[in-house]
Image 1: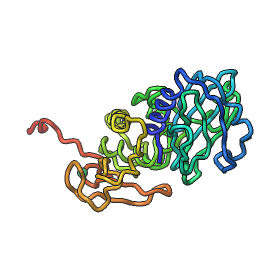
Image 2 (image 1 turned 30 degrees about the horizontal axis):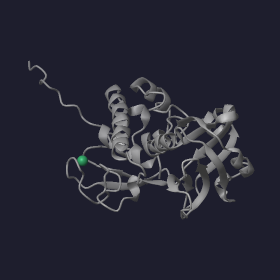
Image 3 (image 1 turned 180 degrees about the vertical axis):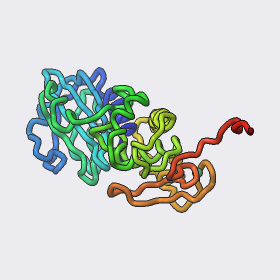
Amino acid sequence: MPELPEVEIARRNLARWFQDHRVLRAEADATRVFRGARRAKFSELTGRVEALDRKGKYLLLTFEGGRGLLAHLGMTGKFVRRPEGHVEPYSRARFHLDDGFVIHLRDPRLFGRMEPAPAERLRQLEAVKLLGRDPLVDGLTAEQLKEEVGSSRQDIKVALMDQERIAGLGNIYAAEALFRAGIHPARKPSTLKPAEWEALTQAIHETFATALAEEQGEEPIYLEERTSENPFLVYGRAGGPCSKCGARVESFPQGGRTTHSCPKCQPKGGRVRKRSTPPPRR
Ligand SMILES: [Zn+2]
């Protein structure tokens, strides 16, 4: 499922494809990706794309003339670029460009979402307005992470996935960040020590940077779609050895999703800090 890095890659791709080109024609099929939005407005999304922004897992497209589009890739949505005339399976909406290419929204499972709206209103739409801090767009310090997440009574992993607190972290990258930071996913945020907030903040940035570096390319394959070796440190490794210490990776249900963690690298009670020098004897 696309999380912040995948949506950021989509944004970069779209920016590159739209640059110096005009949309000659826009069309969308009658599918549920429009939810309650007015599909007819999609055909007005022509001309130049003047801005392409992202907030959390949402893309905000500004077309010339002040028309706009809010797009969410859902579980299986992806923008792909194909030559004119190519029939793309699961194509739900299309931008025909003046360079002979067509940008398709491909979405086999139809959990994506499209909402045409005036560009100036995109950030006022409920889904966007409620979003919390985006670590890439807005930056994220340990103080800010603690401020957003520290007051939650939910488990730390569930709190991290709350888009109204931090925008962009989903099941995969929340698990990866907690593993990097050595924090058990079921810890309560109120029990985290200052050093752990620091470690977790750094881990979130590292996790996103790693994913972005891995997914560069014309048409990214979502990491979880890969059939080759599991690229994650802990996600999807239940029952197998931890990539760091070799202990058996555990999985358990949490907030309606499956969480993966290492019992040794992410002890439930937190890490016991060893004193560097023994206390003086009397
Ligand atoms: Zn481990």
